[in-house]
Each structure stands twice: as structure tokens, then as C-alpha cells.
Image 1 (tube, one colour):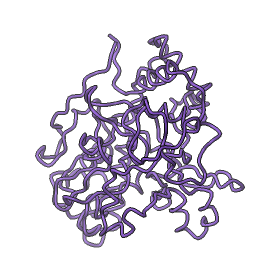
Image 2: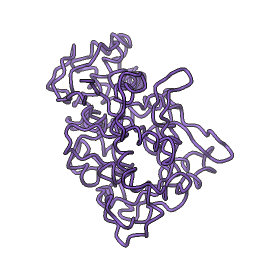
Image 3: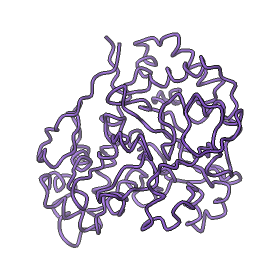
Length: 409
């Protein structure tokens, strides 16, 4: 048994020139026309200014649709934008399994609990296009530290003069490239990308754990121990739902809520030195969802109780990587560089003393730096779990069963 290889190849997509596309494995299955259009958009390196950065540049299949730049992952974990030297403030989240997120809303008015949205801070609410994934797809195009296009019209022009113009008009109608239709066309570009992100190619549900739920394979003793801990003593499943839904839907390993886990500041984040876009420099603190809620008058009263909270990510593909030596960063700021360190932090954050250094720590440490945001830290489900080293290893073994592309041999 093992994972199927995922060696990048140039795609053979109808209507597209491979030289303009980011590398990606050939399609695993037939896509619907809108999904195929979204795929062409997702891997098109022309859709940045200057050209060179596609959506896939930060969300690559070989890494579970997360950041593929090992140099960035090893340090600040923020990927460089289309303009050399420009970086954002957070690690690229996985684009897989993001489309089921509901429109951002307060699920508990009394406690200020929010559910849904996209991006780590929920600012892609889904209110505009009815889908957080579609709302999210529009934002990097115009972000100066990401794809850096000057306007919606510039993006639409690239699509309408590109090698898959016919695909675009076939899906959305022959008027889409008329000057009067820029706003509609830009919305439809985002909808197509979201359709691809919802396709079985990105949401494959093909992990060993899926095969286990279907009764096709058994987990090892260590993996089973990890599953029991995940759903029990370690309390992971309270946010990362691991059981099928009421109608048999595969588990998504997230409840799309927000939490402050007490993650330390990542001093290697290049955002601290991006004075043009971050005038606060080293004084900047990532307030997460709370900072976004502060910008919305109707939700501002919930900002304080959500300071420091970041979106609960899916754990699917959490260990997906092109090779065992490839470094994957974890948490919104990429502070941790391996799963063992993440699990050890969950287990011991409150049981160990506070370090005097902000330097990233690993699983062998005897202290942890203070949280970047001290308010609203989750102390009820993590921090002093009392797991043994063997139990930590078992949890990591289970998490590794969540990578898509598993094949039984």
C-alpha cells in the first residue's frame, strides 16, 4: 500500500497553450465545461502583472493545493507575489475542500461564533457571489502583493485575448468579452475557478482514510490508535470533523469556524519588512477574524471576542507533499514545519514554560514562545492534553492517512 505518485506534467487542455500554464498533473477525470474553464484559469500564468504567477503558483496539487515553494515554506511560509520582493502576510491555505464553506455568518449571536467564509480571516465572505470560494478567487488578481493586476478590466482582457477565449464564451455567452460586460465577466471568471475548486479533481476524497471508511482497507494499529485519540483524548474532532455526515457525506475535517490557538509570531515572515504595504513593520499583529469584523459595522461588536482567531482549516492533505524531504509549514503564519511539532504544541502549550525567544521551536523543546495574540486563546480543547510521545506519534500517523491519491497495492 502507498500513495500514488504525483509527478508534475504539462497539461493537455483543449484551447490552451502549455507554455502559459503552471505545471500540473494531467486531469484525473473528465471535467464539466465550467470546471474545465476554471482549470485553465487556475493554472494560467498570464493572469498576473507581470505574467508568471497563476493561482496554482501558491496552490499546487503536489502539496495538497497549498504552497509549493520549499524556500518560502522553510522560512516565513509566505509566497512571493508576481512582483519580485513583494510578500503577503499569511501562508497560502489549501484551496481544496474550501467550496463547501457557507457564507460567513454568526452561528451563535450570544457568543459571537462565526462560521464560513474564506481566507484565514474570513474576509471572502461569499456575500457578493453567493460562494466564499468565488469571492476569494477575485481578490488575489488585484492584490499588489499577489497577482498585481491593475483592474478587473485587465484580467478580463487577458482572458478574452487568451488561448481559451472560446471556452469562456462557450460557458458564459458570446457577449462576455464586450467592454460593457467587464463586471459580469470578472464575476464569471471567479465562478469558473470556484467550479473547478469544487470538482472531483481538487476534492478527490481519495485518501486512505476514505478507503477505510468505505471498508476497502484497514488502518495499521498505530493509525487506529491515532484515530481513537483524534476523536477522544486529543479532542481534535471537536473542530476537525472526522465522521461522515448525516446523509453519508465524506467528512471534511473542518467545521469552518475560527479559533486562536495561541500560535507564536513567526519572526521569519517577510511581511514585517514590507513597509510599503505594512507601515507598522514589526509592530504589526495578526488579529485575524477580529480585525475583519472591525471593518463591518453590523459585526463590529463581535470584533473583540474574535481577535486572533483564524479559520479552522481542513486537515485533508495535511501531509501531502511531493517527496518526504519536502518542508510543509503549518498554521496561518507557517510557524511550524512538521506535523510532530504541531501535535506537540497542541499537547504541551500550557504545560511548558514560556520561552524568552521568538525563534521557531520544534517538538523537542522544553518551552514555547508566547502567543502572538493573547486574547481569546483556546484553552478548553488544547494546551495540556497529557499525551505521551507514543500517542503524539500515533496522531501524526493518522493524519498521514488523509492525503489524497492513496492506492491499495
